[in-house]
Picture (cartoon, helix red, strand yellow):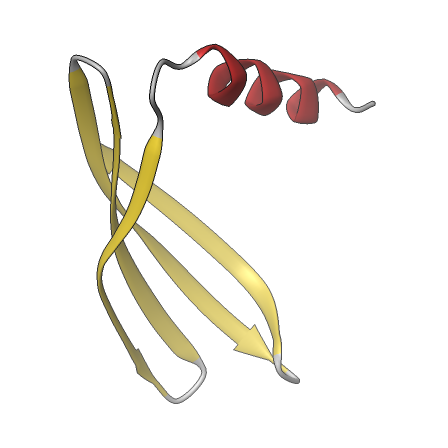
Length: 67
């Protein structure tokens, strides 16, 4: 298993009562933005994913988080 995969599995596996919610999304041509909120017992963070598509597949994904 790749180290990044292990990191994400540990993060989500050890987080009490995790919940990922989509708050907003929009697209224009080959670009899209997804606003989200990740919450758990005792806290939350919000962020956005900026996506670019090519040939119907995600070709680039940038994520920004506001804690």
